[in-house]
Image (tube, rainbow, N blue to C red; front, side, top):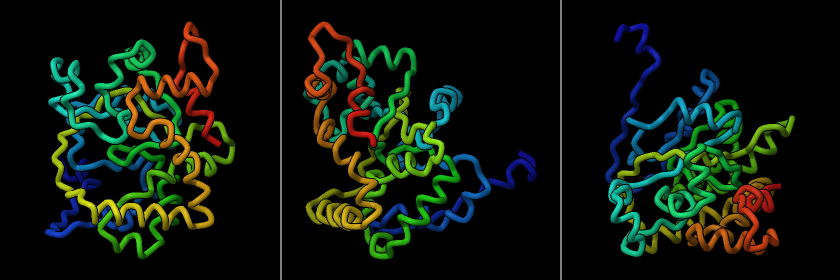
Length: 262
């Protein structure tokens, strides 16, 4: 690669033996966001090699924030995918690709790569409109007690609603979940003991008590009550009740998510 072609690539590497807040590194990059169209924020155990980038960028359309499903290697094995009771389950199973292959409505969305507008996208793999990312992180990362901590919980409960309010014309989706699969190595580098969880809840409470951030969190909290800790069948049953659908009626998960998106 010539020097001119690689001049925009810079690797900033930091080593830490202690737990840290990943958003401390995002804070340092905020001034650079003005020079780009898109900003990708992802966990280091989410693979980008082999990911269908072209399709992802096409199907996210003009969403301000977008993210794919995820799936670890052992979940991709057919036998394991069919024996879900033996898997280690993530709290938000709604974002787990192996769940989406078992039901007609979700399989169709995967086959046709149809995105769903949602009020909550986890931070494992999120692509931002760079202008919005600069606006959002300038505000959210201005809380020194959050940046100084060792837990990064919280911002993903804010950014979908913040994106909708940021769009003055109101014609862009805040967050799109695009049903393409990002490989999740699930390295489990973060020890999530009781102290870690307690600090995470402290972060969330701190954001919730903020006059602006607390309002941004409300749709995500409402969606969490619908999808948190539930598989897709449980989510469908709950949403069908909320939407007053009959058994023979087709199901559209976005109709359910729009009940809580403001």
